[in-house]
Image 1 (cartoon, one colour):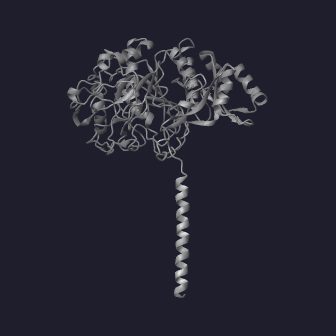
Image 2 (cartoon, rainbow, N blue to C red):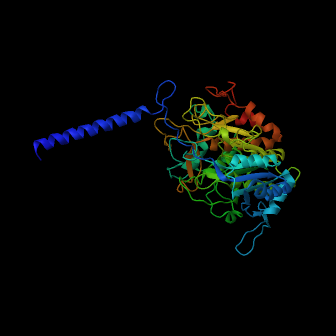
Image 3 (cartoon, rainbow, N blue to C red):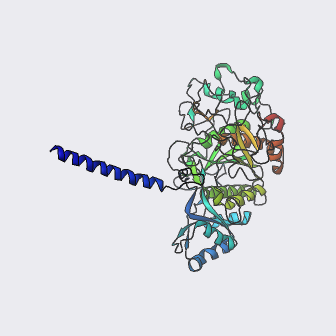
Length: 538
């Protein structure tokens, strides 16, 4: 290449670069600006959808539901297909019942029979449908409005349990931490001596529910004798005759094998049959949260050791489920108790524990503004039938200056919404607002706390069969574990003869003020404090 050719190439390259620069500058100048001349903020990342967008839950009389479903194709251009309703066994609570591969001791109800029996008690049938052949492209909100205009309760099939991409109760870490000290009795001793159960004066100033008078130090860590625990309790009621139904996860693959044996909770925490597994929806998942419900039951049994706990699996191994499964399990419990107690007040002396929640966005409410009306209707029915309902408030407030309101169903006024407290007597930073609070642990925003046998101030200890196979105990955090403690207290009050309608008010009134006080985000008034077992139950 000659010198002239080289100069020509350089000139052409410079012209091309100049033109490219002018084009880029022109394009940048065309970018939209905000009113104050600044560049607009980036588009927000879409939130995960919190419901199934092709399903709808309908509640009403059977004729009204059938008529609406039959008319949708001709009148509105879409078709509703009934989703399967699982076969419901009856009398599963009966200790005399026997399951085998050859013959079943439980009568099986058809879907219609099960729905009709619940309708006799609660007045309404609840069914879930898949939306098919939506010719007009109606939105789910429009279909809900059509159903509501036809006299039905219409709802979305919300996801329940842990929100997508969020760890239960602990945004900065994983699920439960195994208890590693395998010395005989060490795990049981740590369980009964954890700060969550004790008074400040015998727990190094840490503030728990004051369940025990003093710390335990049995010879050789021997906890084989239930009297060691019983004689140290600050309260006389023990929950005898009360049923606590826990709707949660389960580590058990086959509930039928559990009918004739005590399961889960080791002595002295077992009062008769500790858990009766009634329903199972096995869906593998990560992280492993199969012990979530069992962990909560161990806390219930510590507070009310003689109550009868029943575990209904409505969440999968990753602690997630949906409203359809939850409603069916609630129907199962209603039928179980009606077969036992009759239809007049079948849920008398029953507590329902819901360590799960539903997050509803503002644009997801129905046309009438009622949030999750199908669940509202079902739980209201159960409340009127005599049940005390306790629910975790949720763990969405870790990064916020002001805590969020409770999730549904903890937000319902007839439900006891439970937030988490820490060992210092304040609200756990991740906890949403609650009607009342109970120990749930704590975490550090910068350096996540990993609990161990030498560092347990910020966790609660409970039974864990799967994630801690060697010691059977683990550490966990979250309002999910505050709620079972309150459920145990509710069982004590029912055991004493307190009317179900008075349980919530009594627990809140007798709670210990928090430090610093927790106020609502709107009115600024102080909400309930940390539950106080002896003050409330004695």
